[in-house]
Structures are given as structure tokens and as C-alpha cells.
Length: 273
Image 1 (cartoon, rainbow, N blue to C red):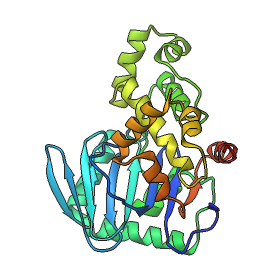
Image 2 (image 1 turned 30 degrees about the vertical axis):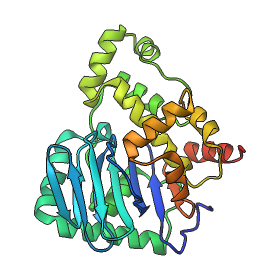
Image 3 (image 1 turned 90 degrees about the vertical axis):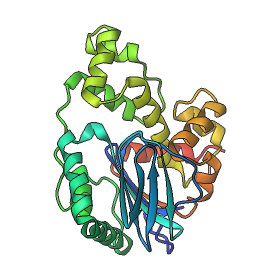
Image 4 (image 1 turned 90 degrees about the horizontal axis):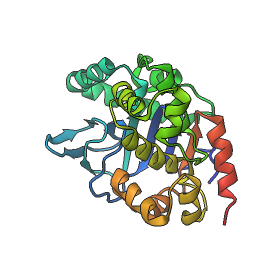
């Protein structure tokens, strides 16, 4: 699949370390628990999102807080999904988005659909900024979260799609903190444990390669999984689908990346048989 051209199907994805917009096949996912703040949008008809312990949201738009288990059904095979990484946005912005969805859900869904329609007409080049993304779908840039520089450096390492091993011990040493102090500060600053955060980022790296012809066992190792079993289990937990099902449904997906380094890594891996 050539990323620079939006296919006739309209299936596309914008991805950067801080944001994702996906418009494509929903498939038949089981329960999922993505590590970002999710905004599901029905591109046609309506959708139903059942959040564990919080009931069912029904309509054209549904919000799911990060790491909460949920299931999604849609009237149409294609669905829109925005994902915002929690550590990148001031906590009060999520409260504002929640109120906006409750009070102006139809208007926000229309804006997201309009942003998607614009992308189909004029595809987004690689290298877009977070502010560009936010203005396209929300009409304004979301205020960034203020994070301790030592934790921000650890987050940057975990966002690296090269697949190199990143441990709490090495991050603590780089921050000149004891491991216990680093882990406490990390959770305080990001709102989630280092282990859970790393697991999500590793699963998120998969999204860069879902339209590639690649060996899944090799890819699992490339993005940091010790073996195929861990890879399959993690992907199913976060996305509710087996890796092979995700790749099968993404063959005509155009991917536009905000991080040019990630794009270069994608090209290297796509060549593996």
C-alpha cells in the first residue's frame, strides 16, 4: 500500500507519538482497552460503545477514557477513532472534551467527519504537528500537559519505534533517581504505571506497520516483544483483534505519519520477508 495516496475505500490513518486518527474497518473486535483517550465516531449511521462498569453509549459519538475495557459495535463496517495520548494533554482538557461531547456531541462528530472528508480530498503529508491535528478535528490546539523533564525523556524513549529495550532501571539511571523514586514520579506525572505505559506504547508501535507485507514474527521482535505469544496476547488485549486480523483489514489503509523517523523505520521493516 502506498501511504501517500488515499485509497478509493477512504481507509486512512494519521499517526504521531501524541495522536492517532483512524478511519477504517472496525472488524469484529472482542473487548479492548487502548491506552489512549478514545473518541469513536460513526462515519455512517450510529455506534454503540459498552464500557466496563459504565454502561453503554449510543449515538454518533462515544468517549472512552484510557485503559478502560470496552467493546464497540457500528451500523457501518467503517468507523472513525481518535486517540489522544493522556500524558500529552493537560488533565482538565479531557474534562472539557467530555463536556463538549455530552453537550455538543453532534457538532463534534460533524467536525470530525468534515476533517476526515478533507483528508480524503487532500491527503495529509508526513510531518504534521500535534497542533495541526487538533485544529483539524477539534478546531483548536489542546493544551499540553506539563511534565517533569526527566519523565518526558523517558516517555520519548518509550515512543521510539526502533524496538530497543527500555527498562525502568535505565530510565531511572538517566534521570539520576533511584528505581523506586523514578517509578513513583513516573506514575505521578503520567497517571499510569511504567509497566502499563510501556506495554501500551509497544502495542501502539504496531500501527505504523499494519499495511505492510511483513513477517509478523519478525515484526514482533522489531517492536520489542520477546516472542510471538507475548505479541499476540498483548495486541488482542489492547485492540480486541488478533494481529493477523488487523493486518488483513488494513491492506488498503493509507498511513500518514507526524514523525518522519517512524516513517523511515517503517520502510526498513517493510522489506523483511
